[in-house]
Image (cartoon, rainbow, N blue to C red; front, side, top):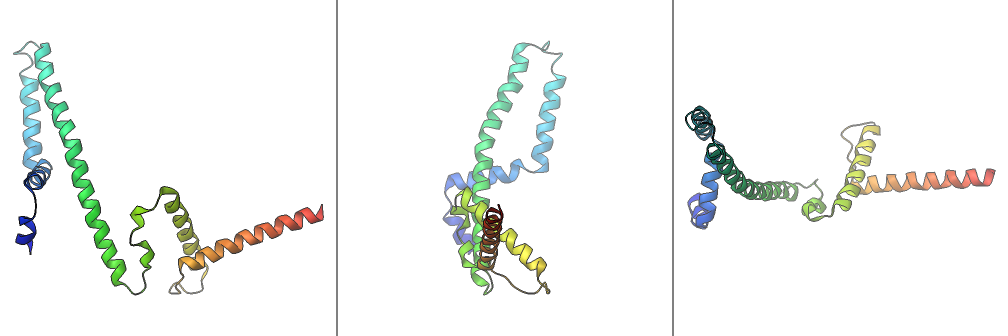
Length: 162
């Protein structure tokens, strides 16, 4: 299957995967250090001229510019792969909530709200007599609703006392 999957990869994909793999390797890092050392040692030979400075500045700027896009491409691919693996685990588990399968598509505000519900879920689990007792997000939402109702009730009682 690996061979068939590799046949479907475009030429650009193969090149970017190769560059990504090798750019993070020890030999490439050692070559980069070697080039910087050669450049540094050659400074006196070129009398630390503007051209000598421009060579390293231009080279590093170009490499950095290209590597930003290559790293982002690699990160996007890795992120999708991790999301798919997590989705498979969630879908395969009878106890997991399928509502989280496409969580990456939620807005930041929706993620914050869901995060708060899970924090409440953790609190419910900690209050439970048994750590093996299971709770759901719905339990967390109900607990938050109850807290809100209690706060409203207390505010009404304070107003009535005045």
